Image 1: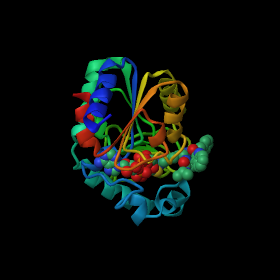
Image 2: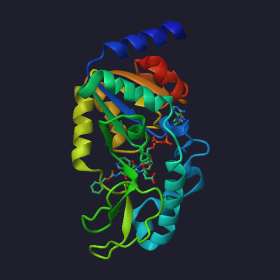
Image 3: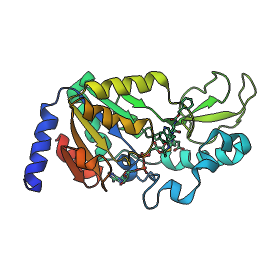
Image 4: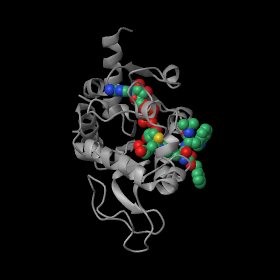
Length: 243
Ligand code: BJW
């Protein structure tokens, strides 16, 4: 099958699917200007994750961690959704509850593209919560908060993201795994599929018999298992698949 036929075939699979999980990683936002984590130019090539994205790092030096998140909030807040995010929002318009969008991204770009049913399993960088109690600042914040201590209990506030070694929100993860086990089509888009437990979602979909489409710039462990694998930018491949 040549490339044009493969695209047409995958497009037909998307058009015919009734229950779809779209699983996204940093690659879907790369064309919006948000850095990825592990490929060339990725965040973990320039920063040590254990110095900035763990509770131990935050306890050691909360001011430095906040400085980093403040900078990322300012720059990510200026990024715009790209054609890949918009294609997934269009797919949601078409499928309604039949699409579950599970994202590892903390940049809120799916919401800004118009997607409404988004499971942000690694949190949202623009939300601010207390590191100890249930306090949460209302609304999204595009800079470091004026005060980084909790008005309720006095502990440090923190960005509402999931750091290494922290548990993901149980209810969200449960919904993501149930959806992956039940879908007839699973799209894996722009993720290296290296971070657990998220990286097990495609495995669950595979073993439940779902058809798999992968969109990535480079191969991952899923590539040989996928029914269709497109090596290219999500902002070009997804609009062509969704139509
Ligand atoms: C394009 C493109 C374009 C580029 N178009 N494509 C089992 C085995 C081994 C380890 C573990 C395990 N279980 C848990 C662990 C530990 C750990 C883990 O997985 N470590 C691995 C790295 C080995 N996991 C955890 O710690 C998790 N917590 C946990 O399991 O808790 C257990 C627990 C239970 C009960 C009590 C206590 C604990 C938490 C993981 C949190 C991840 N957090 C981060 C940071 C978020 C905050 C922040 O940004 O500041 O989440 S790490 C980072 O990686 C971020 C991402 O969401 C995540 C995934 O990265 P992603 O999206 O895949 O990005 P990249 O850069 O890796 O890949 C981008 C891809 O896009 C590339 O493939 C490119 O080719 C492609 N691309 N441009 C299409 N235009």
